[in-house]
Length: 551
Image (cartoon, rainbow, N blue to C red):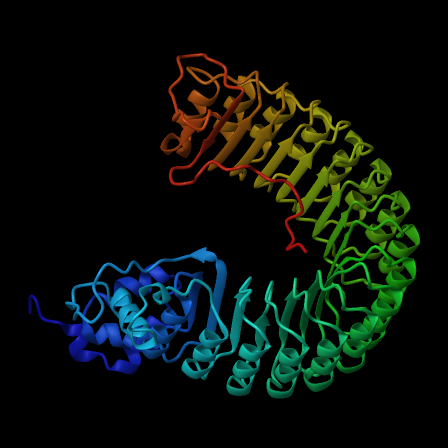
C-alpha cells in the first residue's frame, strides 16, 4: 500500500540495530538518525566510536554524549580539533526545542557550575573532570586517544583506569601524565594491548617499569618518543614482562644497545620495529636478526652508527621481512641492501631516503631477488643509476607505486624500463629528476594502462606530447605537473588531457599571492606550476617524505 511504513512495521529493533551497525561512515549514521524518533534512538545505540574536539568545552560535550551514546567503546579526543559552542542566550531562560541542543546543554551545565560569572562558562581544554566524565559515562570503553590534551594529569588517568578496566588501547600523546597515573593503568587495565607515550615529558622509568610489571603480558604495541627520562631500564622491564609485544616505536637519545638487545631477546614475537636512536649500533640489529625471526617491518631513521654488518644480520635472520625503511643512514651501502634482497625475498615495500652510499648495485639486487615488491621509494639517492630501475622493471612485475625524488642519475632509460616491465603500475610520483623527459613518460602511457595517479614536479624535460600519450593510455584520476615549464595549458598539454579524461571535472591552478584568486589563462600559455586534480580535491603540497607514521 502506498505510503505504508513497512520497515518500522515489520522489522524488530534488533534487526534494524544490526543493520545500523554495518554503516561505515558518520554521514550515513547521521542520515539514519533523521528518519524518525525510533531510528534516532536505535542509531544512538549503534554508535561505537566518538571523535571529540578538545577545544570549546569538551567537558560539556562528554557529559552530553555519555547520556546519549551508551554503547561507545572508542573515544578519540584531540586538542587540535577546534569546536565551539556559542552562548548567545541569557542564563536561566528556557530554550525552544528547535534551538541547538548542544548550546542549551552548555548553558545548563555552566549555570549549575557558576551562576554568577559568565566568564566561567567557557572551558577550552579537556580537564581531569572531563576525563572522569569519560570514565563514568562510557563503562564499556576499550580504546581511548587523548591527543595533546595538556591539562590532563595523573589524577584524571587514575580515575579513568579504575573505572574502565576493559581498556585495550590508550594513546597519551602530548599529555602531561606522570608515573603515578601510568602505574595505576598497569594495576587496573590488565587487558591493555596498545600504549602510545609519545611526548609524555613528565614520565620516568618508574611509571613505565611499574606498568610493564603489572600488565606487560597483554601489551602488544608500545610507542615512546621525546620522553627525556625514559632509559634502557624501561626497555629491560618490557623485555622481561612483555613476551607478546609485536610493535615497538622508539625515538630517544638515551636508549642504547642494552635496551634494544633486551627487547630483542625478550620479545620473540616482534613484527614491527621503528627506531630513531642515535646511540644504537650494529650490535642491536644483530640481536634483532638473531632473536626476532617474525619481524615484518623495520624502519631505521637518522642512524650514524649502523653499518652493513647490521643489515646483513637482518637479512640472514628475518626471512619474513616485508617492509624496510632506511632514512639518513649514511654508513649503509650496497652490501647491506644486497644482504636484505638475498635473505628477505618476501619484501614488498622499500624506501631509501638520503642514504648516499647506496647505489646501483644494491637496488639491482632487489630487482633480481624480490619479485613481490609492490612499492618503491627512492629519495635523494644520487648514486642509483638507470640500470638499477631497469632491473627492477625486469624482476618486480607486481610493482604498483614508484616514488622518485632528487635522483639526479635517473633518466628516461630507467622510466622506460619500469614502464615496460611493471605494467600494473598505478602511482608514479617524480620530483626534481631532471634527466627524466618525454620519452620515459610516453612509455608509461603506452604500457601502464592501470595508472591513475601521476605527479611530475619540476621535470623540465617533460613536454605536451608526454601528457597526451598518458591521456590516451591511462585512466588518470589525479595529475600534478607543478614546475614543468615545457607543458602548456591551452589547446595542447593540460587542456587536451582534461578533455580526454575524468580530469574534465577538475581545475588547474598556479600559486598566486594571498590576496588573489585563481585566474584563467589564454590558449597555449605556459604554466610554471600547473596542477590538475579531480573535482572536490584541494590542491595541496605533495610531500614525498617518509610515509610511515613518524616520531
